Image 1 (cartoon, rainbow, N blue to C red):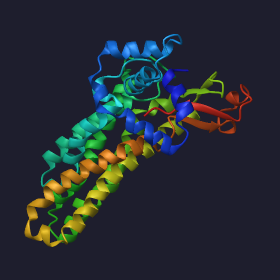
Image 2: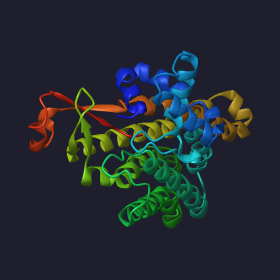
Image 3: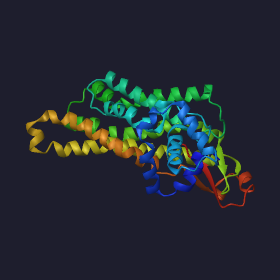
Image 4: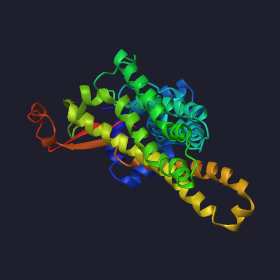
Amino acid sequence: MDTNVQFWRSEGQSFFRRLYQWVDILDPISLLSSKGEIEKARSLLRSTEDQQNKREVVDALKLSLSSVHSDTGAILPAIFRPPAFLPVAAPLVIASLLPHNGVKPAFFWQFLLQSYSAGFNYSNRNATFSKETKVTLKQVLLIVGSVTYATCAGVIPQFAMRRFGLRSPYAQVFFRSVLPVPLAAFLAGFNVLIVRAEEFDNGIQVFDSSGNNVGISLKAGLKAVNETAVSRAVLMGTTAALPNMLIGLLKRTRLSQRNPLLVAPFRHISTALILGLMVPVSFSLFPQLGMIQRENLEEELQTGTMDKQLFYHRGL
């Protein structure tokens, strides 16, 4: 069992404990660490003789959790590491949630957001079935299909308004403020489900309480992917909903009525702040080391262990 997984086993069963850990792990300064520094940190964690300085061990563990895939042990591309999610995704989310007048700008920003989301979801998937770093043809098709569908679906509000010439105030409110909220949540979850479909097609590894490999389970893979999809839907749904509510309140104040230009920067700032607050909450919503009851596994796996609860790495 990898050092990262062992950490989540001991530290990640409480939501507030996970939240505390993710706030620390998501420090973007760790993105500046070189490959040599990351490998040195991993070597320190693997060595029992060099762990006298507790501060060094804590820093090494933080760097490992933020930079290394827990299943393959490979160093993640910097842009797809957890600390990079907020700095990269924030401008894409803000731009994709803007009330665009045309289809083309909405399509452009949706394409960038869905492409980055697909890359992040794939890089941080569970890879216990196949630890190969090469992308298979099937996975390429899943990623391309997910990005294409989600991009087209994401511009439905702008397309409908332009295609049918919807100008009434009620239609404007529905397509600009109401519909984007469930749509953003659905597309975020859909992206995870499609990009990580191989996990419930092929299964993922499950462990007993001693860390021993019990086998490959399709049901555990489905549970892991569903949990991650829900966490992403909560992230994007909340990020899309709360700024609209705050803007609605702002428009009723005298300040905004006197200075209508305040609405646009307020939208950008509130979206970025809510996304920043929701990222660690979303990552903490479910344990990184998930649990599944033995009776919920395949019959052949139930006979291979006496433990009532088995564990799996959920991915991110």
